[in-house]
Each structure stands twice: as structure tokens, then as C-alpha cells.
Length: 124
Image 1: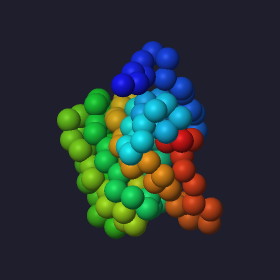
Image 2 (image 1 turned 90 degrees about the horizontal axis):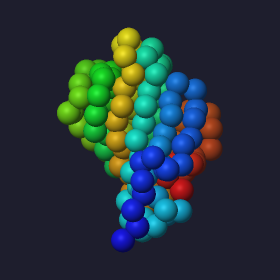
Image 3 (image 1 turned 120 degrees about the vertical axis):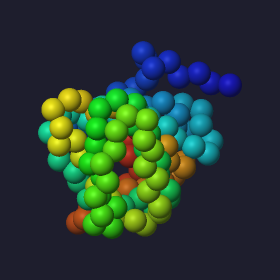
Image 4 (image 1 turned 45 degrees about the vertical axis):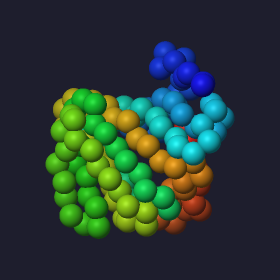
């Protein structure tokens, strides 16, 4: 059974977000990916869809999520379940960092407006 130490997990950075890769095919996972996100205070929400169900669990901080145009205020301990093909955006309009864990089936692809679908690097 592979163990991925949080201290040595690969780190990926995109504007306003740092992802720490935990479970993924490159780290031994066969069916499910998981990673830890840290989102900067004031991080904007970027609308997109995923082609598989994705789950977010907030560890600390607060988030503002929009699913199909409906807003949801999330706090530490909350979970957000995003059905496949649902337009959503997740941002941090607050003054403190947001930390969460995300789970997506292996091979799940993100679709951002005007871009080709892709598997996020932390899920590869």
C-alpha cells in the first residue's frame, strides 16, 4: 500500500492556488485521485466543469461556490459535491487562506471555457 507523505507530496502552483498531489496514478492510485488545495485570500472563482463527479472537503477557511449559477457559502467541515458536467466555480473572497481536499476519479478531466479539456497535473 503506497503512502504519500504530505511533507514530500509534489506541489503544483497556478495563480492563487497551490495544490499538493496526494493520490494519483503517478503515485500508485488506480481509481481515485486526491489532493490538498490552498487558495489565497481574495482568489477569484474560475467557472469550469469536470467530466466526473468531484468532491471538495473544506479543512480551514471559507469558500464561495457557484453551481449552475446558485451560490453556496462553505465553511471548514463542509463538503461540496459537484456532479459530472455541472458548471461550477469555487473562490475565496475572504481575508484568510482556504484549505481543502479534493477527490476526483482517475482520468477525470476539467473543461474551462475556450480551452481543451485536460487532466489536472496534480491528478496525473
